[in-house]
Structure formats: C-alpha cells, structure tokens
Image (cartoon, rainbow, N blue to C red; front, side, top):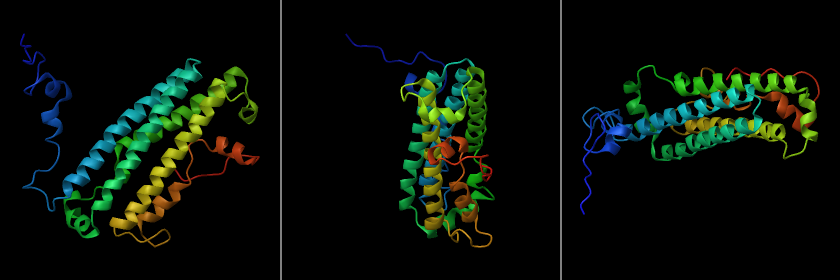
Length: 234
C-alpha cells in the first residue's frame, strides 16, 4: 500500500519536514553566490549562524538550570548544565572549519561585515547573562540548605551539590577552551597582532581566556583562601 507523503502542516515547503524545520527560510539566510565577495563567505556565515543556534540552546539550558536550582533540584540543574557544556564544545569544534579560510579571503570579505564583530554576538551575551544568573542561584541554594561553598570538596562525589559544582567547573572550562581557540583563529586569519599589541582585538580575547564565571569554585581546587580575584567582564 502506498503511503501518502503529502504535507499536512501549514507553511512553506514541499514536505512536512521542510515546513516544520522552516528549511527554505533557514537556507535563504546566507548570501547568494551573486552577493559574496569570495566563495568562503558561505563557510564564514554557516559557522557563525550555527554558533548562534547552539548558543541559543545553551543559554536556554542555563536559564532552566537556574530555575531548577531555585526549585531545590540541583540534580536536574546538573544535567541541564552538562547539555549546555556540550553545546559550547560543538561551537568550539566547528571553529576547525576556519583552517580552510585564508587571511586574504577574510580580508576580502571584511567590507561585507561592515562594523560587525563577534563581540556583538547575542548568543554569547545571553550565555554570559545566564551564567551569572546560575551563579547567583547556586549561592542562594547553598545558603538555603546551610552549606558553605568551602565544604563542597569534602562532600560525597555522588552528592547532587558536589556533582553540580563539578559541572559548573566543567562549564567554565568549556567556555575558556572556546576562547583559547577563538584567540588562535583571530591570530591565524584575522590579521590581528598577538596579545599586548596596541589596539589589537586579540588583546581583549587573551584577557578573557582567564575569566571564570564561578571563580570561588576554582579557588577551592587550588586551596586559595580569601575573596575571589577580580576578573575581566565576560
């Protein structure tokens, strides 16, 4: 018996898959062959647009993790944070595509970018805000259950709070790894001078490599007492 594959969902597209995923609209977001200044503009846009999608998901997971922590569910928060960290890992991995983008081609496409900069990424801004929100929720939860952050290293590794703290460290490490890779890309194809070069955007990228959203958890790992050191704003 022949199965009817005719679309039943509303919207554009020849199939329900195309309509649900809005494939026609999605694939129309890149510059056309007639518009590009070099063929690798497609590579450049696909990497950045997919990055924004993964960051949208990561920020959503972070916000939900904070909400679960507010509800007294550190175990659920840990699972969501692990998903967010995987999203940032995928964002980092796809930077490998830029090995195929030459400095000359990047310079050629720069007029098409206008004054655009990766620092303007709405996805990263949402991730930063959600990370700070999670940090506040974690501090509030510790206070509510009467646990001092300094006691966490001595707790059972299977304890939900211990596991959540480890996931928060993992999140920080994943973000730092992305920043290291991004810094290297800026030097490789961006035409930027290395850290310390006056006026080089790479200087700020290098400074942010050491930023941590949860510095108190890192202090516990190295046994440093006292207030958390100041870090550059992410």
